[in-house]
Image (cartoon, rainbow, N blue to C red; front, side, top):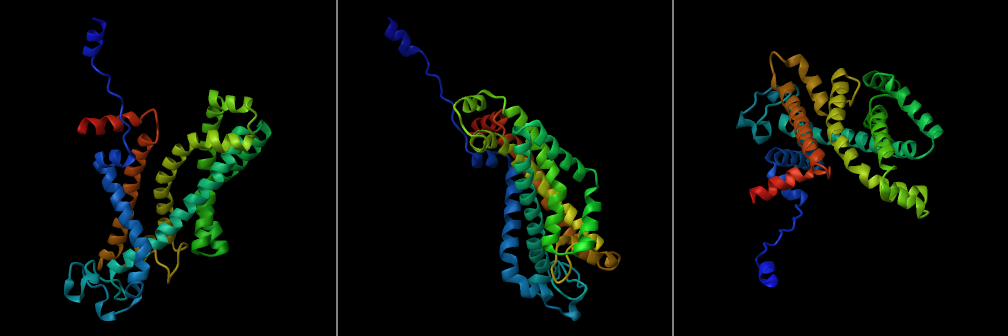
Length: 307
C-alpha cells in the first residue's frame, strides 16, 4: 500500500538553470542591443585596416555630395564631407577612436575605483576616511570643467582624453564598491573566512569581490555611454581629439557649419552616437537583472515559459 501510494506521487520537477545566452535571446531588445554593439566593435577593430585609406582620400569634386547617391560608389551611400571624403568610411573608421577612448576611460576608472573602494570598505575607519575625502575632492569639481582645464594644459590627445575622463569617473566606482563591501563583509561566509584565519587580501579577492563584481559590471556598461557622450562633447567644443584622428564627436563639430547646406555631415555621426548610447542603456538594464541573483529568476522564468 505504501509502495503504491509512493509510486503515484508526482515527481517534483527539478529547476533548470538557464544560460545567459538563452536569457539574452528571449529578451529581444537586449539581444538587438548586443548585436548592434558587436557590429560597432567589429567596425572599430577592422575598419581602420580595411577603410583607412578610403576614409582619408580627398576628392574635391565630390565635396558635400548628397547621401543615397550610388553614382560615386557604395562608400558615398551616406554622402561625402566638405573635402569629398566618404562619410560611410569615415564613420566606420571613427568608431575605433571613439570606442578606444570610452573603453580605456571606463576600464581605468573601474580598476582604480574598485581597488580603492575595496580597501576603503574593508580596512579601518582612518583609511576609509582618507580615501573618501579624496573622492569628495574629485567630485567637488564639475567633471567637464576638469576635462577642459586638463586638456587645455596637457593638450588634446587620446591618452590625455582617457586620463582625464577616467579621473572624473573614479568616485562613481569607489563609492559604489565601498557601499557594497560594507554590507558584504558582515555576511556569515566572510565572518567564517575570518575565523578560519584567511588573510585580508584573500578574503577580498575570493569572497567579497565576486559578490561586488556584477554591480560594477552593470555600472561600467551604463557609464560607457556617459563617457562616450563626454568625449563627443569635448570633441565638439574643439578640445578633444584633433585631426588627423577622427571621432564621431569631432565629425559632428566639423559638420556644424554646414547644417543648412549639408545636414548629413553632422546627422550621421550624431545618429551613431545615439544608437550606441541607446544600445548600451538597454543592455545595461538587462545585465542589471541578469547578474543579480535576487532578480535573475524573472528572466529564467520567462525563458522557461517560452520553451
